[in-house]
Image 1 (cartoon, rainbow, N blue to C red):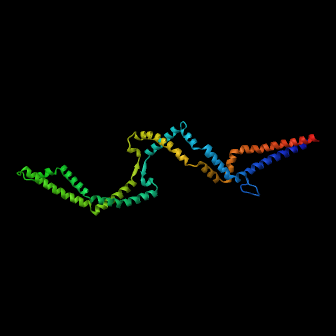
Image 2: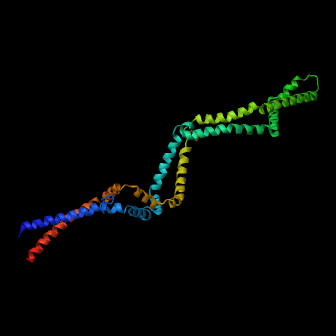
Length: 311
């Protein structure tokens, strides 16, 4: 038997089979751009590949029903509720600075602009109110109640002559008290309707708003009873979960998962697509090349055997 010829047939057959399969695998990805009439299968069909992947993911792998089922699976709801409770408690117990530091500068500027504009508006509203008869009547009623509380009637009665009759003293005291009340009421109304009072009203609104922006908020939980934050969070977490589950299907219906995946794949470079495909199929692609060497060697040996038999 011609062992040298057999060896050559096996070697050449193995090399031809392995190299042929290696070239076939290489042509799946290369060349990235058309070169001398050659264009890799994946780069050439990248758009179709992206569309196929997007359709597969959107219709079979990541449907709204799948997402809802995953959310409803055992243990997930409890874990989310615990996390919501932790986040809420941390938010309530965290020390917070003034709004001026917490809010973005653009929003702070808008709030300051709004407060500056609110001053004149508040001044106009204040001026309209103090000019009404209702305001004047309320001032008079307030003065009368205050006089009664201070016992002005008893003080005025002491000024009357002891020998006069009680009726005359009471009338005089009432008349004096009424005159005093009217004078005081007119003075308060006049002061309230002055330009200075209107300016003070505007300054109070603007200054009060600025003070609120500069005042530290501190811990929000300090405004609640000791056990209230924890009980509030415990009651709110299931309600929040129910709202999420109720609204999620409608939200998912508006999300086009297929188009999102398709755009994502199209955004990948051809080299990145090759890395993804090779990362999943590298073992199988190497096996194809190895099988090419093996099958080529077997074909070389079979060819030698056939030639030997035909001689």
